[in-house]
Amino acid sequence: MPTYDYVCQDCGQRFDVRMSISAYTAGAKPSCSSCGSANVERGFTTVNVLTGSRGSGGVGGSAGCGTGGFT
Image (cartoon, rainbow, N blue to C red):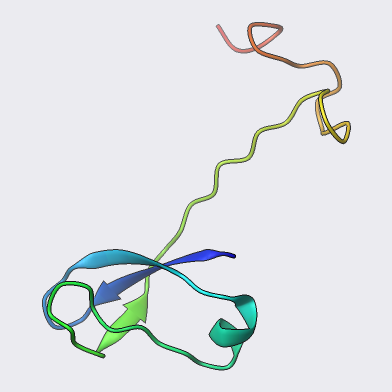
């Protein structure tokens, strides 16, 4: 289940909410975890992506921990 970041427009609190994609696309909006306000907006989310040769043969071929990376 994806995690969505929100920012309360009343108190400025940032919080995460785990929500199904179907609930999100249906327009479900959480309440602020700090003040309870429904005046929240979706925040910006960054995603970390790991690649390597293990598992499904990700991008990067044989790159692994400690091999061929940046110096």
